[in-house]
Length: 467
Image (cartoon, rainbow, N blue to C red; front, top):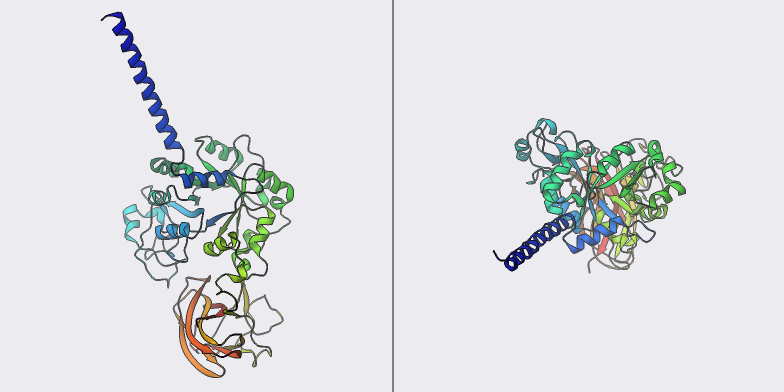
């Protein structure tokens, strides 16, 4: 071979080699970086922890109000309803496959029984999830228990996932994330010692980790030596707890987001979803003022409405004066035998001055509770505009369907069925009837049949003007 030819061959060979290396490097970069522009923006938002950071919404067990908790449809609906993060629970089957399940057993949420750890994936897949939060009386659906792999493929490039119950099996979960190219989609969380958490983060720069702090671990704030958690989940039952003092909050905000759970009172000193939905205390606003930048909720749609600037007093209301809301805990004055008839002593602590009427605090919702046979309650309804109204009630029930009866202005209306909502804390609006009203004060009487079994909470009645 002549020298010139040899020189050309060497040059061509070097070009081919450099090109091949560039392709490999580019492929690696593409694999490690978010491929979808909307998700890249969401990823950037999660890493933003300054004073102007967007409030992010995390859906607790996905959108269980519409589909079974931890199901694929619930995950998809949570994202559609405005969730940036979908919180799911993971456990290993007998053959080592991560599946979505909150409890150690499948009893509450499926039509089967037994421990997840004792069932193979094949056996798990034969089961069917039940509606909502489950329970013995929840209806069976056609939804199967998803694997983590199926869940991650469903959310890829759309939202983050927060893995609960997963810290002790994090290495196995990480394998699934590598296989689905979704390591950067998942927020791991736990409350180990700082070194263990730091060691796990050092495995892969794409790992996102959230450290849980409470009274016992408040000293972990700011203790990470190098790479910091993407967030701290701050759990507190008092505003005097060390982890929510200004210095601690400021220390977290310097490097990380603050994640607060608003599902029930013990997680955030009484600031709850239901408290915000009452429109009085605006508990979500209080948590944001405290420093929270991620809120986990059981009320994704309402929180998304509020985050966009909506007034919670108007949530689920028709415009103007076209909606009338009657709180179930506020009967007409007069007490026992006049405003209501309650057959047992007050079972709740919310209104100790009422010796009989059961008004309970259900995670921030003030509801008529412990309803028993032959009881009745009267309400005054101020109708500002004559017209035809759709009447509904916001209720929670954890048992079989329950019948209630209504009277309007002393005349019996009808008997209505209240369906199971799968928990006494799972409030939802259910329609009752359509009725015409003239402008003025009307009297509504709620009556329950003698054979009713306690298992019903009523938040309010609502009349929405149709025409």
